[in-house]
Length: 207
View 1 (cartoon, rainbow, N blue to C red):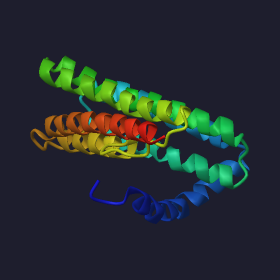
View 2: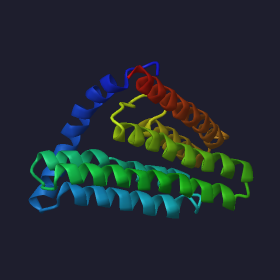
View 3: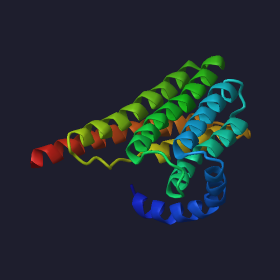
């Protein structure tokens, strides 16, 4: 990437933490733990994506999904404030439910295109769904073998941003933006898969 993803996250995370801390404190007082927050965020994302997107409500769907995606940060805030939940189990649950949420977002868009009888974009978005899952799988499998794989053009945050922004703008009437976003994401995801495979091969070869 042309930018330093780690540096950007280090800049954004403290600001988001300050914004979410009051809400996190309120949840902890009510006995709601980080794992419950993770589950609520995923459930909200799945419902909004699979109901609003097929209905053609792309703007409201994207807006609602964005709110629930913020739960991905809120669960960490709750955990740090003593909301309970084992860190190992919580990390596993969070990573697993992230995949569920991602699949729901792109499945909703696939259904939207299919109902519009746009078979080309249905196929492109299906490719985005499969390629996104493969991006995550390659990293998980590499790390399971003890090989670092934190590289690539389009990781989960980039995929979500492109998908949600293009869908939201399309819902506001911006022409061709959703198709452009899906084609861009398909290409970026394919490149990322190749980047990660090559990176792992080089790492193993260096051993």
